[in-house]
Length: 404
Ligand code: PLP
Image (tube, rainbow, N blue to C red; front, side):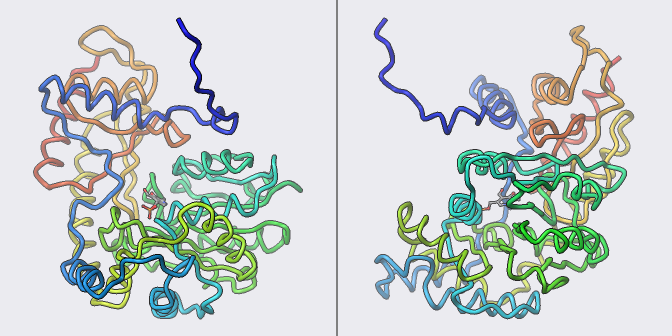
């Protein structure tokens, strides 16, 4: 056999195939075999982009918005983003403190590429969105995972953060509401954490607010710079239109931070995508400047689904699920099922085994908590129809009742 000519860079060697891909791969295979599979893994709203946003994009195309734009965002979109920060968060950013990218993920990517030296540490509370660690690794950094206990609502404890900080710490990642736990931080939750960061002037904060508008029970969303203006000079606030406005495919994210950081991030962007999509930027202007009631309306639907799923899961013996404050995920514990045996005689040793059992026995795809750095849990995305959620919860209850 001829040796393969392809040799991936060592940069990629630290990034394994995620558990999410394993489960979604198996789900796809079962579907191909004709099985009825309900996938509760989507990281995007099942709603469509609002009509007024689509119409703005059509108009922009007709008006010739089909060329390269300014490197890190059109002046119109930067103005809309600045207005959004003033309206929603009471923070006034200057135009040179704003960057626009192809999705919020690229904000994180540009920032880490622009700042990390080999071995620089990025503190990531777990359970966490896996991209934080993988992007840090690609950029040569070292993810430092800090476990957060369910008993504390999966929130970071300030003392744990203080212990994790070293002279190599460059960034601390914060994400509220969180993917995967749905946990959101109130002002009181944030305060002790921000005090620790204030006390360590070499440490910067990367705050991922992408689920800002998906919060329930009148939870008041806050972002760290709003609470602690002293951290403004070393915080990158990350957000985007993907989740709030059901615009995942349009690929528009944005960041706000010190202008020197924003300029360095623009250098990275200049040699990757050159600029975000012109049409998508026009659409994002319409989303941010247009009527916001559609966001609240959809949030009410998500809340009804959250209430249904959490109640249904908590009725199942062996499963327990805290009530998340936001996002569209539940992160349920399955510790009570570890050690039980499937009708086929297999022992459930981990959340991965449980997720695989659910998929093979009743055709429900959930993501094991270990994919987010914390087991034994599993994540359900309830960004899917009420009827599918009802059917999926009934199947999970049935499959669990057959464990002995
Ligand atoms: N941050 C979190 C916590 C996410 O869950 C996601 C998407 O799943 C993103 C950022 C990425 O958002 P975007 O699609 O705008 O790149």
